[in-house]
Image 1 (cartoon, helix red, strand yellow):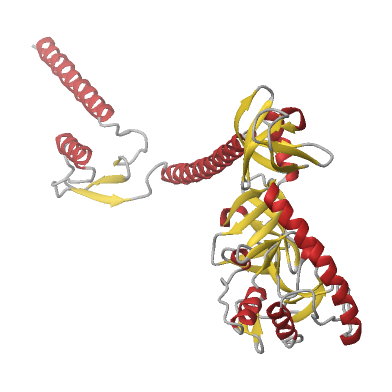
Image 2 (cartoon, rainbow, N blue to C red; image 1 turned 135 degrees about the vertical axis):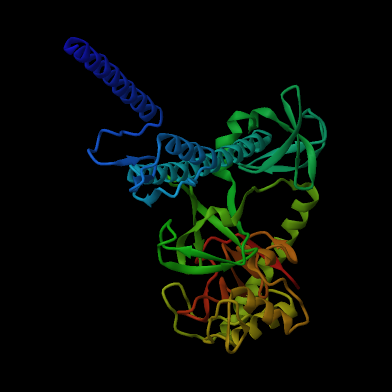
Length: 448
């Protein structure tokens, strides 16, 4: 009897132990599948991704937990209906790491965009240089002591149509038996190949003989003392003004700056705000040469007479470093040209003002020439770059007459004779008289 009783207890205990072990295994399996470290903390917390579930007095079943986890996984948010489960928002394990990762990804994306932008700028510049080189390859540049004749036929027997002077340029049309057919200025004809270069050889020579011009393509462009937007402003240049490019500077960030010459001195402009071009001296036709020689002879005679007349009517004024005494216009040009020069001289000493148009209260360089010529019924374009294309061309400063417009890099003045100009210079100096050759002359234009 006793033995049977103990045997029943053993059987009962074995059954109970087996059930307990089964329950433990089931709980462990369920906890593992739910990724809930049930036994890790030693308390009845079941942490999940971002929310800690605390079991209340009436503990939820594992089935409730499973349903809650499934709802959270499917909806992206916690949606547990059992009131016995209390959701307590806490800091997500690894949230700090996620934020760091997000910040890192943002930095990486910004770096990628900056790198892409630099790469695009670099590619654009490469394409621009390639296009320029292709254009230069198609040039024919004279490389002689004086000039090479442009003939009507690819032969020494051809009629002379004009002259291509040393370092002058034409566009290649064709090549015939060692002769280049070119178009240069108003001349179309043939030059002997041995006196010229073209193709690959013309690329570097074109850079040497051409005048590099930057035409301002924004309303007002700052010229800075250094190639940086943080550098101080040396001066300002308005839209459509032509600036002489002294140097092209590419920085490590692929931005480009151009060193230019303005009235205030040499400074830097950002290349994104200008249109670059290269100007060349072109051929002179036979007719143009004859007209020029006749004109120069007449000018020499007039200059001699003007020099004699000026000795009787000269007035002097003190001059700065670049200035010489004022010589009022007298002879050597048209009556109207002399009148223009003398009218402009009345305003010497008045102030300079960027964008201004008043001869008395303040004007800039092109405003000065515009206002002076307006007094004689002539309407000039408002920018120095545009004024470089008005009237007719004069062959250099040596042939300038009073009243002519003398054009510089981003600047203009009015020639008054005897190698001088009157111009609205800078805010510091105002309207003054200077030597006409104080800076590189880009063009001389005659209105009258």
